[in-house]
Image (cartoon, one colour):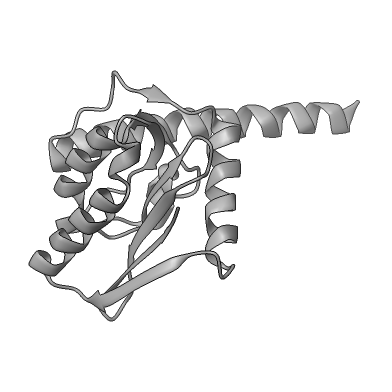
Length: 168
């Protein structure tokens, strides 16, 4: 009986944190990047978390291609254009987009860093959002198709090196 209550309480707490994470993400994207995602479709939390884990499992395999270069705004923009041109045939396809936000944050205060929130949008719309986010990127930006047949992760390390890991 006590274990059942603890289990239910744990589930409620996790669900509440996920709702708060979504609210924080919506607010931060609007506040810091003028991107309104309040009317967008969101992936189910369980699916978003599972796909997020699968992305990083995929990166650990040899089934991906990687572009690595020192951070430079122009180079970054050209590489992003390259990736979107590479995936142009999927332009109309819906993707799960995991945005990051905020130039300065404390990780403990941003629940969306612990509970991945995925927006379901067409790939072409994702490019518009990414162009606003890449210049102030402080966490990974992940894009993956609903069928997992293509995707990429854009990340920056502590030495200002950018990596784009992608697959098709």
